[in-house]
Image 1 (cartoon, rainbow over the protein chains, first blue to last red):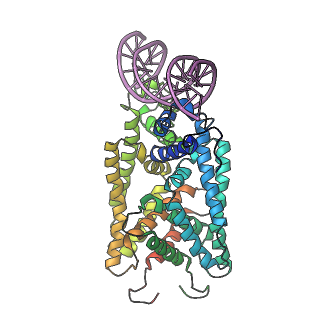
Image 2 (image 1 turned 90 degrees about the horizontal axis):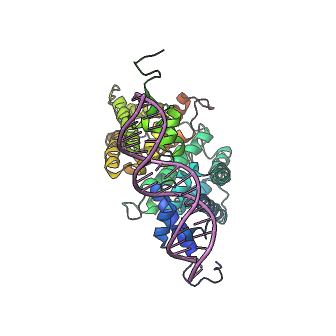
Image 3 (image 1 turned 120 degrees about the vertical axis):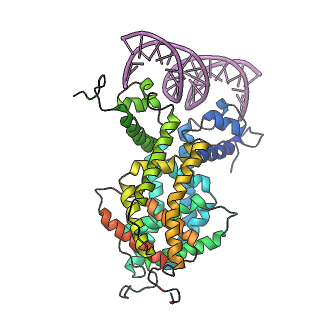
Length: 203
Length: 203
DNA sequence: GTCTATATTAAGATAGAC
DNA sequence: GTCTATCTTAATATAGAC
């Protein structure tokens, strides 16, 4: 990362983003003031406006960056062709990535309604791209006869719901390791999709 | 037609709650002002304070009433003893009830962090009571050997996650009827719990 | 019960000195 | 890059007339 010319101290820019993110996650975008953010960063309010034109842009940039990072992280992964392996891989990727970026995930989900309509459209497109990854894995497995579901669309949403819920209770120091949680979820999702059962087998 | 002396309109009290609920659901508690609520109700700001001591109490009362209604609606149902039937019943109850009170459900989930700590504790207790219902059904089925899960606690959370997600996409005029959705979810959850498979059967 | 008017506080954002 | 000072607007809440 290139630093700004003429800056001696540790750059303030990343601090602003970090503290804004944490405060938004904790109290919600609308409930956090620029003054609060400035206080956490350790500067006066006016200074913040050297790093963002306004509060809305601060939120938008946080979400945009998070979703772009998420998408690029997935696409940089070696691509598996078998839908069953690909699904297992996606579950692991999703849980690992999301559990280490809890604040960004939380804000990107909770604060959609705080975006201006223009920014909302942009962010929703990115979110849609991510959900499409799972949708396509499921539909490929479905047409290959590897998965058997009554309604692919609803199943996708249900799986997404299961995975999203994890963030509300996962704690690194909790009873189960992340590896164990991943395995449990891979199992439950395999059950829902009837992985391994042939289309013509009786249920 | 005048109902009460000096009052031409329908009683204001329920209107205040209704409009506050809808606005909180749409924009979030912190983003909604008392002026906005007053405007929707059709009164001046000062008038609102005849119906609530402050904005926080307005939010708290909405959540409290919603959760108390939910709990009492469940407890008024005829109680089934068989865990399998009880679970199916709970899924149906949950989805029906939640789909017809979308705003209240949404606010009660999203605005937990907007409550004062005292109010939060109260509301969390009610929420906990509701989640305990599902937990107990699962653990009863588990000990009766009717369900087979690798980790009951995580399974409960996953099922809750699945059910909660529905509210984010369900529309009464959508492709599937509520009855169809209920059936699909009963099926998926039965799959996760391996309902009908004996504990000693091979998977 | 509802209104108008107002007290008080705090918000987002900008200007200009250093 | 950061600060102080300030503009402007809007927030919650209250008081007192009708």
